[in-house]
Length: 304
Image 1: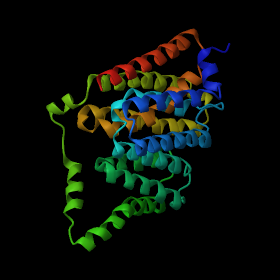
Image 2 (image 1 turned 180 degrees about the vertical axis):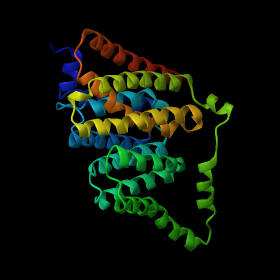
Image 3 (image 1 turned 90 degrees about the vertical axis):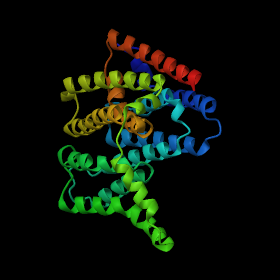
Image 4 (image 1 turned 90 degrees about the horizontal axis):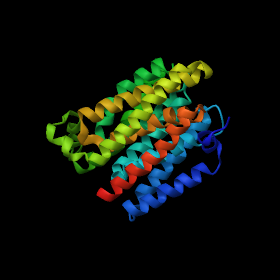
């Protein structure tokens, strides 16, 4: 029996409607920030490609990108952050490239470009560099694509953006901006940092986390319905989602970039849940989720 959630998941009108909703929200929250909007749109497009090229869902659906859009509009206070938008865009591009290296330890080109994207992201958010060892571990365990060739290519790709910037520093004979940037790797959170995150932003995190946990439980209970490759990719998403949650709690001053990475990793999990279930309970949960998402968005717009 096809319920509302299944009709929405399979409809070709879902993405245009959700995109229009996000665009209207953007005009209200940040009407003059067009570069950020372009980055957001590019991120959504890459998520569409990520879902399609890897067949994350067992049917033709735009639910991954639509889920990301709905989640992102909840934190509309962050729309004006250009660095956060670029971080999300580079991270998504990295995943899109990296997933094509699945079980290919000779994919040096893909490893280089994927980690070059992460290197660019670290220019906007230096603590992305702490995520690199985790990506290497996931490359080895989930993607089975880490060999000495791909590892070497990833290191070269990671430092390539800094190599280009170093030419300017050499010309200026001043490396202090680079030293100041890298010193951000070792800053830690204090209790007062929790005040910088609004109630609405915590509401958005908790709501998305609850759906992510439901998505994780559902996927792994029914993982036998998907092939091994999809299980590996969703294992990748699960680790990143849980890691980002812990990171936000420990260092809330970095809520802006971290929540974006969290939502990118969470969206496939939640999309899979609502696309491949059709019970009365999940249909009610789907409707409640839409209402709650809109309510949180309105609350954040009201308190913005």
